[in-house]
Length: 359
Image (tube, rainbow, N blue to C red; front, side, top):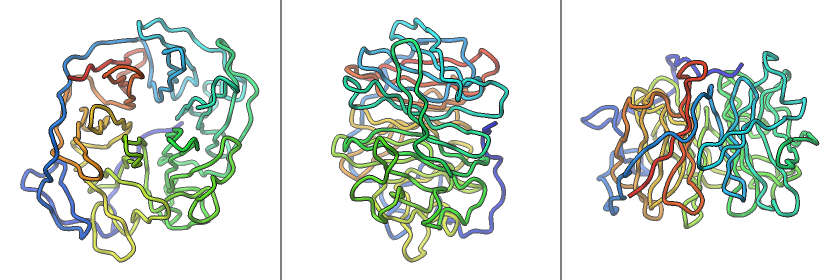
């Protein structure tokens, strides 16, 4: 069963530049030194929050269907629900390969094909007995059938990553954790500790930097993925004992783990755009909306809002601190200036899907 990582002390080089208010996000220059907060227009604050759906247990991922409903999956029960904006929830009959509770499997990321009108494909990232897999199924409105493995050989451990999303280029991106073997993150032949980019058949996407599935490397436990309106790829990452990260991801770049946790001056490493202490972080889902990045925090139990202009980020602001417990996923609601957020580990049947209306 997938569980979040207990944080262990690491001997890897970590950053020492910390703001006077330790634990808050710290703007960082590429040199690794603290930089002045850039001038970025402040985004509108959320204007309201409400429960869309309740009675869930660890809802891990949310993927929108063209009709405005969403597929929401539970991590451990392996259940998938079709959920409408009004909160009506219908359980989807799942393929046997992902419908065996108490089997030790887990169901993490879920994504809907951008070519839905022609294929009705749904993609999942799940933990099987031998390791993590990316698979494809077909959804007929009530059943997920036709299971096909696209990628296997992703080792499984406490650090699994697991988020999958289609980018604006039409290719599928996936985050993979280092599976508790930190050195795998630097091994470009390994699928672990990476962001992968692939076709809908699970093949390396054209233009990948190494001719393989690997898009970027040096990641510990990457979680959220999102793109802003200019097409920049952003990623959240759970660190070890010192810092969690917000990264601007570019193809072929090395994001440092295990040499760096947070910012450092090691040659060849790409520093995060922001870092924060675990007590106020442990980031999971990530979404872009209304000119800002929104980060769902697990241990931090809050929603971070970070204004962004181009590749420059502004002053982060925390919302709903300790109000709704651990927050797992956050996604933009299509056609609305709103977000859906899932809570995490509130107890059996205690989790919810929340809607946040933006200003």
